[in-house]
Image (tube, rainbow, N blue to C red; front, side, top):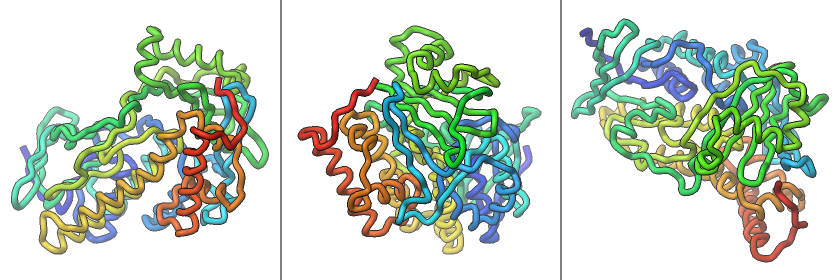
Amino acid sequence: MSQQTWDVIVIGGGPAGATAAATLRQAGRSVLVLEKAKFPRFHIGESLLPYNREIFDELGVWSKIQAAGFMVKRGAQFWMGDGSMHTRMDFSQGSFTEFSESLQVERAKFDDILLRHAEELGADVREEALVTEYLVQKERVTVKFRVKGGEVQEAHAAFLMDASGLGNFTANKENLRDYYPGHKKISIFGHYSGVQMTTGNEKGDILIIRRENSWFWMIPLADDKVSVGLVLDQAQFKALKMEPQQVFDEAVLKTRAVRERMINAKAISQGHVLTDFSYTNRKLVSERLVRVGDAAGFIDPVFSSGVMLAMITGRQGAKVVHAAIAAGKAWTFAMKRYEWATRRKVGRFWQFIERFYTKHFAQIFFQPTNKFRLLCAINCALAGRTRMTFGAKWRLRLFFTLVWIQKYHPIAKPIRIR
């Protein structure tokens, strides 16, 4: 069993872990990244938000991402399942939004770019290294991990950053996970060719198709490669008593807005399943430990917030860890501020997600008006801007007030959700 010492050990090499590692290396810290998989590897969560660009620039990785040739995303379209109505969010039209476009990415390639960038900055990246134990002590953190050949190794650091994703390694060990009530979901997804997607100025748009109690995503990854996924309640899935792919196929047939686009579709890969959406951890920080990305919590992906929140928390978490090491402390008040700030950022998306499944929200959201620049404020929030101006904030509050009024006293035209 070999032993080594680092400033920081990062569990996980996805967007949160790679961002944390790159940020720490920019600050001059020694970093060990332990990633259980061998990159590149398949992953879901392929649609980015415009404000990812800020972090790409700060990390110095934007030129590498540009060179990868990913699909440009200029907007997001929200459709009713029967195709009767839809609305489009054009990121270039929001007066509070500074970035006009984003990207649709194949995560295998995208995540590999980020991890290799952290490695080029000097992070020691160990792939196929499964963390099995960790121990936080007064003066250091000890981590045990199993490498590909089965050997167990041990490493020590001043701090541990958990970027283990939905594995939620340290929080699960401490029994900290809480699910959002009523939001236990399952997603069934795959990649398809022959899907009829939008063209012209709308080429690259993500399509979100709203069904009565579930929804589809359709994300164009290349000219003839589209990610298509169905998200529904676990209870609903279990009640159907069918295999995941059967549930997916039947939902496609019953959803006109999806069926018509997939009439000539052929599967490249299909039948992938992900469960247990939308949870939070009761603690994001403790002595010598900071949780980032999905290991800080996960929310329903309907508004494509996952990668951006992962990278924001990875960068901000790394900054407070660097400051704590510089101060020679195991815990700082700045770490607690990081936790509060993370919950606020997640909360901004959650207020949309929580209401997305309700009829009164749909009746306002699918019939938008830019009076008082309300649509601009919504655009700003869903583009991922975290530092909201006062003007955008009060307009968002007005929007959600209108949604609440719609529930009791209709002010928008009634619509059917089928």
